[in-house]
Image 1 (cartoon, one colour):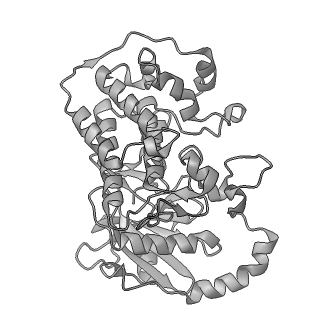
Image 2 (cartoon, one colour):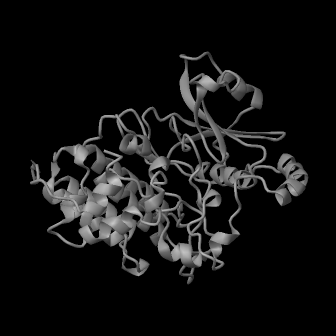
Image 3 (cartoon, helix red, strand yellow):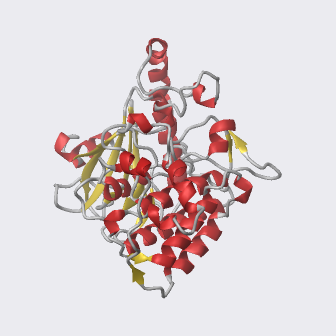
Length: 390
């Protein structure tokens, strides 16, 4: 868990934002809003009653520390605003300090730093996602998956305690204005770390589908090693002869695979598509969706980039100008071609994540020297769209 495991300002889950404003009923229409409607208010009392009495499946996260609410309140200085790291639809994330050996709360600046995520009591979906995180991260241990240290379930309080990721989210480093851009080598290393994490999940017997891969859920340690965080939407993949699992559509606009959005059919290839979007963000330095430009809201980064990705002569036009041309030209072309494969409209034609990982690792060992490509003139449509970002 990093210093911004949730979006700093607002939650970008589909559960709080529809994909489409069309009139046809779809899976998206079934999604709950974060804001409390009148019908939700009417049932809030019964929800709170079940919320307080529900329990964690302690047979699963046996390796986790069970914290008292008092301990976490002390560890975060009573959840003061100056310790807040981020806020989203789930709730707020706070910085805390624990003794390295006993995990007891300690004074700021001593012991180990942790990130404490506190669930909003009125969050309907939040409790379900809280349970999913406890049960998945209570079992999963991998260098590219954020470590869950423990949890608190006491009265109406639900909290999670994670390792602290000093560099925060990939989103902050890619898109925040004024920050020093991350180098080409670091971007490719992050891509490999994410691919390794997803390959691990897909390789498990349960074929775990992450379902919410996006830049804000990729956290970075002090050396820019990347880890997947926020497993609230994760679920087991298809088993036996089943080709998919059918589920309500949740995720984030711009990242979710089109066939999943259209049908609710979820497979590991849904994650592959989302990885293609993240890889495209790493290459271009542009968001999958940019809500700040309402007049272009219907065009995603994938929509804009695909014509360039499919044309070897124009593919370098998508590259982040903040890199100053300091990247491996052949490596960039290969990464763009890989992104295009991941973004194939037919999931059967997308590669497996283990194949993506192999391709990225091979690309990363290339001996091709960094070259500055000759300036390419971007089409006027994108210049208009991107002028306020540069």
